[in-house]
Image (cartoon, rainbow, N blue to C red; front, side, top):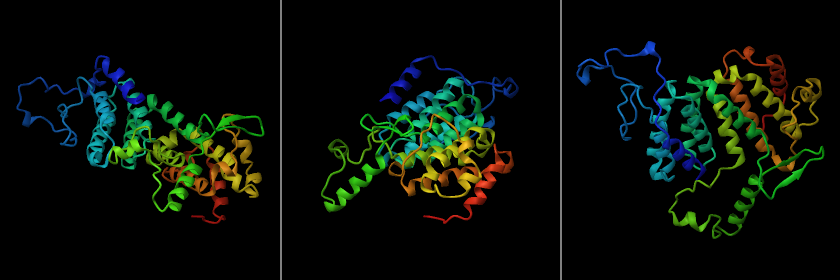
Length: 329
């Protein structure tokens, strides 16, 4: 696996220490005191063995934690261990003392876990991303930005190349339609059709790390980062609001092309970006567009003081115009 081998490479390098602020040094650490008299720090799950958590100083072994997490088989029986490991990584991430390369490794690993087809780890992985982005926003934001932009693009598969009418070459995945076809086939066969590989069946419900979740779920997981990190949404609103306007132009108004606010608000002029091509109705689906719109609205709703957002007046006009639309579910 790419993630596991990459972590093995990082683990082969000498372990780096926590980044220490000398103003926070505990000068009593060298005194001959009983352990019971030392200050108590944040606790971590007791069922995970590891170093003394009373201080975040010395060598930082977070790469070893990520390796243990990656090696743990993804089965329901291991759910508690996996979430406990993620909780421990979250505690380390909140300190703001991770070496930059470790902070980057954490956020990239968590973004990768959002693609794994195992729902119990998604919320915990998002919490880790929020924690590290809050404490060390600078080094990790480029990776979060790339993930947000990638979620807006048509995912690529080798046999699904499409050339749009405007000459923009891109790729897209037929994951939703394939899922729909498999469900229909399974239903028509009255459950007798095995739509899972024999390898997975032999593993007794163990989920392969090659098994990816669908495109819409990846979108929802990725944008839930902004919902749970409103400060990040506010400080990086120029990027996030721009992606929202691109979504309106390239996806939302594909199903609502006759709405007058599309012309009155001149959204197309505010969402010019050659990196993103327009979608067709066959590639989207009305429910998919509705779910994506909810992700954006939840992210903006979590921000306290929306006037600090980029183009907040335009956002207010768009929100007001949407109040007159039917609330599809």
